[in-house]
Image (cartoon, rainbow, N blue to C red; front, side, top):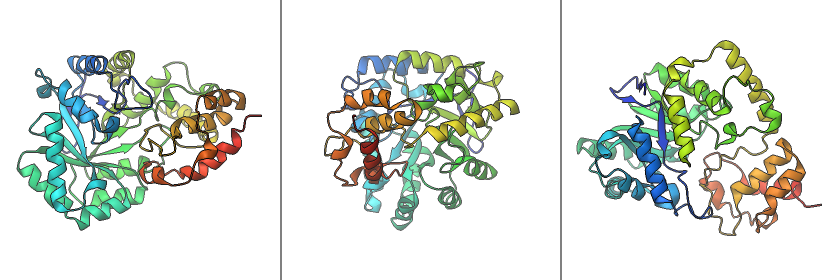
Length: 372
């Protein structure tokens, strides 16, 4: 494994990090049902082969990911990795809550400290809460007590908000959604380069856009070169950016682990050239025309109180443009609760990191997916 360095902090990390929100589950409708034996083998195999950055959070796998990682990192594995988790800022209502939630997380993770601690899902309103409740000062207290080493944030909002947050504190790192499709979405290239000017390196989430870039539709696939696999193109694009320290992958199978280990072992040999970038820009142009809803299947919107499988319905809706209506209807048929049963409560919209107007798109999906 060839490692990459953060610009600002003296830490070397594996080019691929293990994202702990897509473990195999026994019940697809209940993300808390982690298949522990299989998932533990996957994580430990990755660590044994050089992966040294693990990323979890309070809410992942219906609040069970941190507990599970506490089990995985026994038997000496905790000492082999940089462990990251995130403060659930939406739950913080007072200064005291900062330390309260961090202490609960450390107990769940069965460790006395985490290496990387992030304020989870910052956007404009949450950033205002951070300032109002003196969150950063409390986090500095926690760091002085040895509860974590490096402080950063994960982000979902506009580039202007990203720049404001970057300028608002002396951050060690940050985490954004970025891939060859999302180059001008949220922070995008502009934010990546803005932070780099201040010496701050990035951690990348959604490198495959919720798996979409590993399973391109036939129309889009026609535009991508066959010199590399679809996954390799997506990862090599990111590893060609010097501003990026580590790319997170939410691995669900051992085959995915093995594939990522193989790709990560030769990232230095696979830097992209201008012709490659031009080809990927062409893929993005077609992809953008075919994508109706920018859903990444993160499942933050779930469970729906009225029983809709929101990511599944949006997948079917997108297929009406990217594949065919007949194909989309086969996908849609598996969901008992249909799009027109959305009550527009908008609970899901408050949780969506993509800021999708879910209730409005459900109306469009219902119209498009009427079974003739």
